[in-house]
Amino acid sequence: DGDDDGGAAAVAGLLPTTHGLPELAPVDKKPDGGAHPEMKTKKMRVNVGIEWLNANYSDFTVLDLSNKPMFTFQQGLQIAEALKSNTHLLELNLKGNRLTNNVAQAFGEALKYNQTLQKLDLSDNKFENAGILAIAEGLAYNRALTHLALIGNKEPGESACSQFIKSFEYNTTLLNINWRLHSRQSFAINKALTRNKEILRRLQAKMDTADIDPNLQRGRMPRSTLQTANLSAAALNASAKLAKQAPASPSKKKKKDDGGGGGGGGDD
Image (cartoon, rainbow, N blue to C red; front, side, top):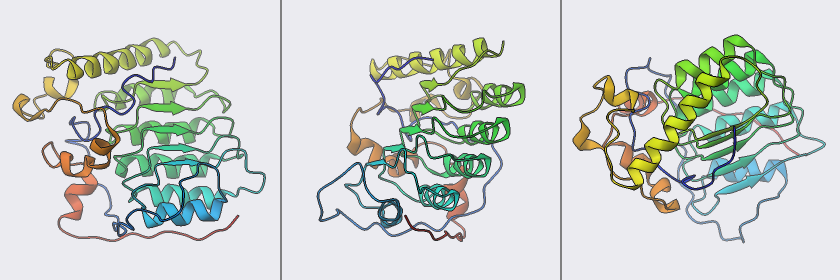
């Protein structure tokens, strides 16, 4: 638990959090739309937000669609689908939109592909154990998300907590989870989050992490290929290029050979 913004834009694409996991189905990468001509805005209509996500505008980095009375679960699914190929959004807020497990499961899948998003607020929705478990599964493949908000959903059960612990055997970049958790497994989860913060601190200080990084301890990646974290949005936007210097995520590895995927429709 807790909120530590120092280092939120830290090590996306630099650490081997996905190597050795099962390969994912390929997803077509949508073309980069370049800088959007309009002024950037956080709050907008849902259908416009989905359109901009799909366009992958390079200056569209924050999207706040919280507390939308007419928000539908289909729109939640569309946003999750768009995130799979979006490479510029850094913060997404979907707080208070009555989203249910099917949307949570879609976001769990999106986290397996998206390697740019840093902050994801899914608080005050209607997720239950199965949906939160799916999000935890997605984190095993993710090396970008640093802050996750789940407070206000149903408290995760033991199976979801166990999955978080399993995913932390690969994920070394998530720093904070905002939720209420009374499980005894919370101690192991908090220990993993503390470890991730220490990995970030050492990377920023150009120190070795081999003694605490589970990926390095498994020999997944030669130490010489690690790079020091660069705390800038530009570095995060270039995470796809940087990731080529580390073991590729399952989606990137698969897309070298083939492609496919799709999205949905919806409006505000």
